[in-house]
Structures are given as C-alpha cells and as structure tokens.
Amino acid sequence: MTKQKNTMTKEGLDRFIEELDALPVKEQTDFSAREIVERLKAKLQHAMDEKGYTIRDVVVLLEKHGAKVSPSTLTAYLRAAGKAKSKTPKHRKAASPVQKPNSVQTSIGQKLDEPQNVKAEPEQTDALVKLMASLDDDDG
Image (cartoon, rainbow, N blue to C red; front, side):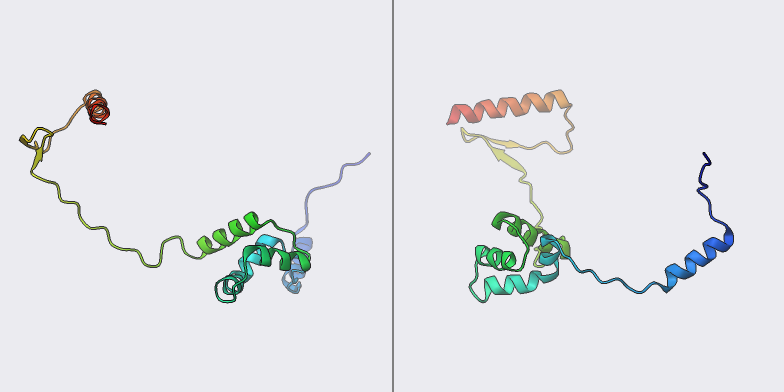
C-alpha cells in the first residue's frame, strides 16, 4: 500500500491560487434564527415598538417562514444584536467626583476627624469590616 503525499508542487500551488482568486462570491442561502435577528434587528424592533407586535407575534411570523425559535431565545438574540453594535450606552453621563468629608459623626453625636493617608494591613481591614457589620446588626 502506498502513502499519499500531503504536499503540492509550486506549479500546483500557483494554479490553486489562480482558481481561488477566480471563484465568484457564493451567496448564503440558509440563515439561522440568530443571523436573521442580527440582519433584521432594526425592522424587528420597528415592528414591535412602532407597530405594536409582540415577541410572540414575531416568533409566529418567523415560524411561518421556517425559522423555529422560542420567545426567550428571540429576546436573547435581540439583546445580543443590540450589544453587538455598541458596547457602551449612547447617553453616558460623566461620573461626578465623590467628595470625602473631613470628619465623621458617630451614632452618639461625636465628631471624629478622619485620618488622611492611612494604610491598614489586610487583617486590620477585615477586622474593621466585621466590627462594622456587627454594629449594623445591633442597630437593626
């Protein structure tokens, strides 16, 4: 039994490249429900937002044309198609700077000045968080 070679000659490679370059664009003939939603998101949203159709109405229409999808899946596809366009919200507000008070008032009315530039060890931070949680539990 002879082994087949997994190689191509330079002439064969050149002919293969020419044939690849000459190939016409192959049109897609079948589309998944996800692809349909990605392509028609604006039209689907318009049908629901402006024409009063529901997700279920769109599901029935899709099924009528051969694409089976559940209402929850269609909702997820619409959400994903919306996120694919823009990852950030269109009307994002700038965060306002947080102003730190110079002093803190305790529950008994005492004012304590906050220390500046104090670094705590992780064990101290954990202990403080636990203490504050227990104090909150006592208040409730």
